[in-house]
Image 1 (tube, chains in turn red, yellow):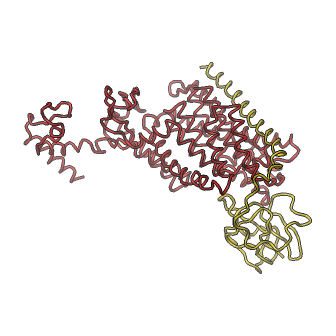
Image 2: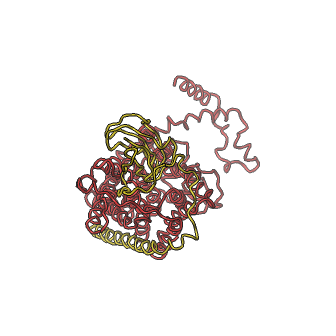
Image 3: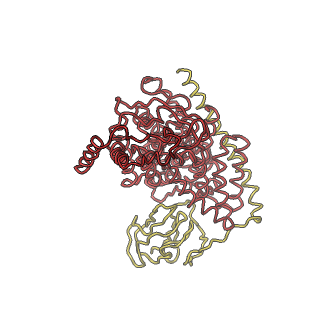
Length: 476
Length: 149
């Protein structure tokens, strides 16, 4: 600190005493006289101007940045993309009228908390770590990792390239590519065998989507109750509701399309609650399912032939395209991955790449890009608090919906169904299935429900993709 | 605002309806196909598992009263009570060796089922007569893991 002050004082003194005002070099190449080559003009050709530049470094440090009042200009004034589209600016206000720099510092604390959850507590570390770190990077003042490129509005020439997180985001998240690619990997990792062996359990996966709509209504209700703090339209409410699908890529896919400004908060809520599934679900399950029904032993699953497993993805894709074309991107990617997995040795390399290398690469870039949307003016507001509450509501009601349906099906169906597997309908593969298994074992230490719970679990993925398609079609 | 809330309600009814409809149809189609597709199993025969259980259980695989439920099934034969695998997975740890006395609910083996540690417990007190698996073995549902006399 001492050295820095000394350096500043020295530079300031040089600036004041030695450099006459008329020796100042042109500020930009555009202002240079035509006779002078732009490079020479920018360099100034003068040792004093270099000193001035060095002295100016002190205005570009993070210390100054955290004290800055104003956000970067591209946020308030808007900018032009290389494609020529004009992105309008928006007013940037932070709660309590804090200066922008302080808001960024607060966001860094939030991101450090996310990193803490990921690293120490092990909450979905594969995703929360890149998200938290992306948020850190995005909130470093002057670093410009999320800044759009500087484009000449007339010629559309890129004067200065943007930050790398800007390109990650534009390439993969704005276009919806990353969630789709993740879905391929999820498909290549998912065994639909338990679902094929006992198709009825797919209805539990449908029932557990109930939470999505409860949170959707909740978001609209909150807007009605606190109109001065919270303002969620139908699009925002749908994006918040989809947290209850407990499926990260689906939530990101839908939110990017309907309410991109909420992306940071929704992704953080979705992944945090997914990590909290083992804590959120058991009390609700025990509340709904009486001890007697928790002990129900289910019929052993029949073995499923390879032919059936290969036909399954094709069947689902065809059904989806016939009934619900808007869900085809997500379901299609899922089923492509699954087909590669089930075909076996001939395409094992593709399935292996999808479920390992590809999904890992995309996870890094997706996490960072989502984290880059953790901007202070979008995160530090009452709406985020609302989103976090509604997300919890969505998970709770999803679990309840599955368990209720499980009890109903157990009454109606011939073969017994343990209602505990209903809670696995909220996707979150395979965490929710493990929770069903664990709660079941608490009541009967010899009753393993894991494989039975995988049926609702994987149909929950299909179910939430279907809901995402429906919401997108109805709300866009 | 009231209007938006009603729109939300319509979304709830329509959305849940469509999800149920879609998945019910899927169930129906799958139930149909479950009777048709197995006839064509010869077109794509099942892959042979690459690695078989190293020490297959010498006891006959089909016992007269095979366990009806998927819990860690037990059955009595000459050597004692068999502890069977309730789920397919890999053996992560073997906590006992032949000759060890065990009490009811003692942990015998830990299976790795879908990346989840699943303990297999003794269902009665006794002495371990034989351990039929080793660490790293892949086991299928119903495979004998341990004999307790």
